[in-house]
Image 1 (tube, one colour):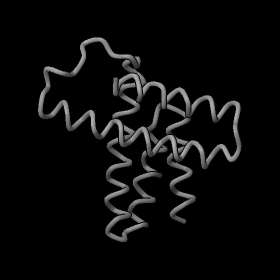
Image 2 (tube, rainbow, N blue to C red):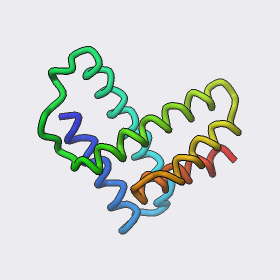
Image 3 (tube, rainbow, N blue to C red):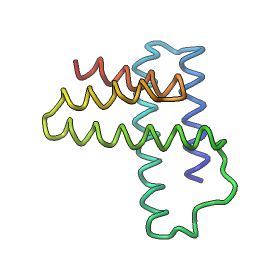
Image 4 (cartoon, rainbow, N blue to C red):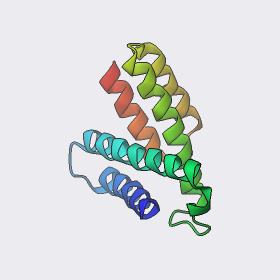
Amino acid sequence: MLRVASHLLDQAAIEVRENGPDPAAENIEGIGRALFEVIRVQHKIFALQPELEPRSLAASSREAEANQLFSQFMHEAIELEDVGNTAAAVERYTRFIGISPTYHHREIARAEIRRLS
């Protein structure tokens, strides 16, 4: 169910980017934070019970890899922000933008940079 939720959130970010509603950047940021939380819960579950990780994923392998990369960088940036190191958090988002394979994840990172700047 969480895989389906992450896939739906991923698709929602694409839909918002392409068709609105405005303000798209703010809405994509909210979707990104929700996606991050879903992925974080998945990682906790699979770490405790790896046998629960499905063999057939709702998301393509490209989407799954992009979500995992997004989750990793966003988690690191949020931790940096929580300790007051916004410059390092911005750097993490900037680095992510340079390597992210998906436009909507890059847009979420850009929205976070704007929020922190």
